[in-house]
Image (cartoon, rainbow, N blue to C red; front, side):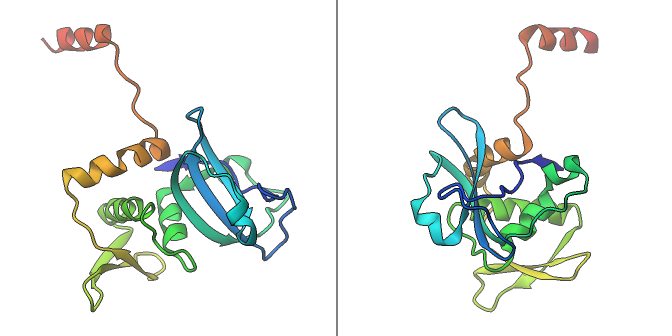
Length: 181
């Protein structure tokens, strides 16, 4: 599954200062007042001054690395579910209340695709330990129950990330029903 998200910016959304290699950058994915998916990239030291969108879906911290001048621009625009999971679960990112349901869902989806393997729970039983099939890195994900309420909670986040299905017109439904008859 590919997720089309804006690229990491080259400058801080708060101060306008250009990022330099090694800067700690906080990325925030959300939806603005016009219902458009937005990404804010700010220096970690300036995060307090950021104007957050009305709806925030997730937040992660990363070290800034300049993009190479050459490269495939389309590839840079795509963020896979696997990459998003690894980004949200890697240090120094700590699963927060807003990110936890999304991380749990991504873990479930990646386990189903056999990219992650559940390896049990932590000693306190609060987190599930997953092992990445390719790298053998281990990730701890807060344990949760996959109830209908859980999926209702993450439905909006998932709609933003993977796209909501287009509603079908009544005429299309009638034509489909007639073709089956």
